[in-house]
Image 1: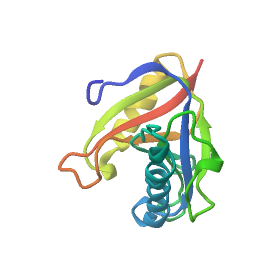
Image 2: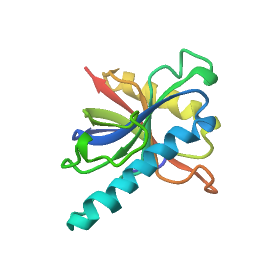
Image 3: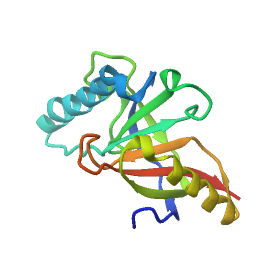
Length: 165
């Protein structure tokens, strides 16, 4: 994947652990911390003693209403990909808000964005234009996959939408 070059690819469904937050993405750390705590607690205290490897993916989030509401009211559905064998009953957690879900995909349009989140808008608009010019329509919420920490010198983010004809 080349930076700033939109592409259309087909992705398989992913099993994920999720937590939903409301508010500015920079101020919802307790929810995201609970997500990581559940994922890594389950990995090391449930599956590792059984000799079972539990890979955990990078942080992702879906933003179903970011274009409709002020940032302080955004709904964020945060996710970490986990293996298909992980079930809700396996989760070692204190927060019942953490759920095991299946995120369906299929055809998606995506772009690798490099830079600060606050400057994403032109890249998002270029992706929307690419989708339309390719004969597709957006068919799902705005999704981001965070390949680096937000504090990285140059944050790397995959911006993605499900699409349909």
